[in-house]
Image (cartoon, rainbow, N blue to C red; front, side, top):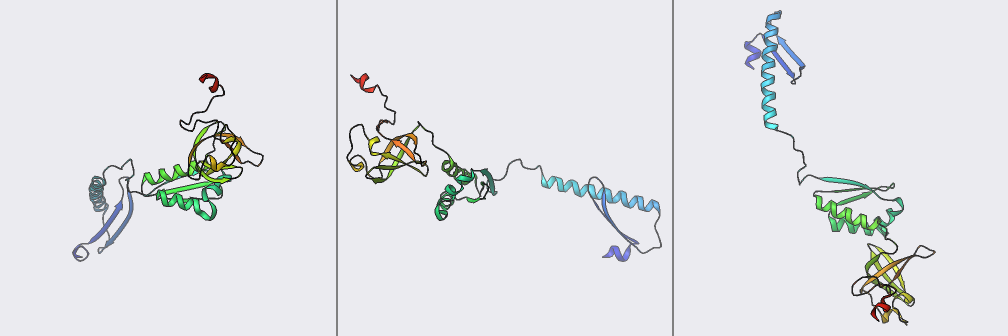
Length: 227
């Protein structure tokens, strides 16, 4: 440019508000005086401060919160013995979580679960579904469930997320029941109380101790109160 042809010195200075970070100088004369060097650095400093000030105005203050459209991620831990439940047979359960929530879900062998999405509601939905899967039902509590299978010896009820339990035929009603189909059918909504677990860890449920209309536990002295 003209500065190279018409001037005796080409001087470039770069830096921050704190100080100079780099210099470049080309001169056509044998040398320069200390006075010229001081003036050049002072002029360069003024120009640099002016440019940095304009940049700061354009950037403005940093935002404290992410944009709603910014990708988000949350990490939780689940017990390692629950990993199989979250993934499901052939990945069926985790695919269902992804399809329903719209979030991406990755789970490591140590139980670390990464949930990411473009919006917070998708993450919250996926987290809720995962927590329901790994949560444990409490003995003595009453839950509403759905009859998912019938056998001669009782009915299987899905009552807590993906968890199923058995209502033995002896626990279906206070009167004798010949076959579970005489009381319920698949798809029926029923109230059950978690009695505990058998020797193999299978869930034992009862219908007869719960009022099927209200979902309230039937007290042992109810008959006496009604007399």
